Image 1 (cartoon, rainbow over the protein chains, first blue to last red):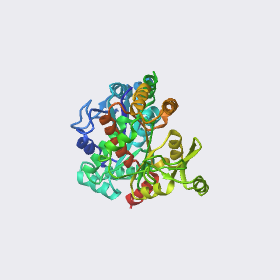
Image 2: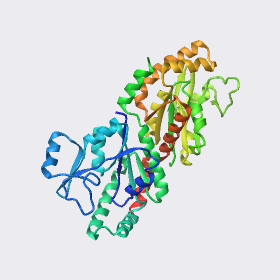
Image 3: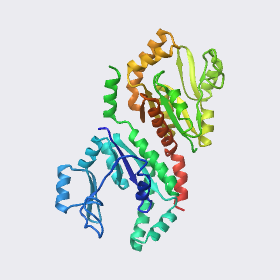
Image 4: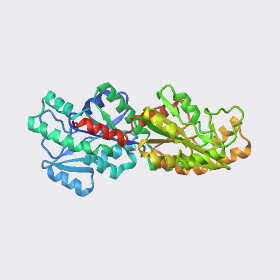
Length: 202
Length: 202
């Protein structure tokens, strides 16, 4: 497989989507991995765009069949990444971008480490994160408090990532993201190397 | 320390210097590590530019004093990298570029892995390497044969490097090198992370 994987993690409110949108022209063709979930779709969410929405039974059949690269349960709902579209994109030589949490990062790295580059995206301070979450006003206070508490835990896993992007200023963060995405494409993997060595000494 | 290390290895004739020169405007300020050696300087070589030329005794005193980040003996001469200028450049936040062999890469990674990104630069084929070495006509046939034999061995260590640059076309190779060098600067290191986490949750 010729493609590469870029895992992005970081607290909700870190600006991951904004950064990807800003950088999308500069990073070339990529496949943004869409998660599968058993939770109900919210207003405005589209199946196959925001998530693949499936039933509890269908998800558990997928687990049994080994269809998931990683999955987890959050508040009684399953969330996971199907292997098939990821492998297809890798076969096509695409960069596959994941927006998953630190547990997901661990699982993807354990299974496909050879292809993985990872970056943790964070606001410059915890206070700034809180400010942004209240400013965007899409969540209840209780949800914001939970997100902030999660962020406090997640930041401890910073050392597991190849890169940390401190999103202080969007143009700077997007530029860093572009560099990291382009480097991720260049990361070598065992299979590609074996092929090269065969051609090389011939 | 805020800087980063980029180790370049690859056979003589791979085009390392040409690539660095091509990319030097695009990669920003860097310190190119100059090796220390006990071999006699050749015509045109300058002390402090091509190498630091020192006596056998001075080199061995340096070894005893722990002055070298890495060193090796090649055909009876010592070659090594002094720690001091490397640490100074890292303190100044610079990217330190090494052009060392695969053994040197192993030693630098073992001692300063937290700061290291590495790339192996190679011509597309062994035949092309031979062609280039004969074309540049700076070495005797016996030396070229030794370089080719070395290259055959070195290529086996490809898997130890973060990146492989196949220097088929200089503009493409320089562009890849630029991406890798800029990503190397963004690589996180433990010390910087600790500092960040202190500021973050305050």
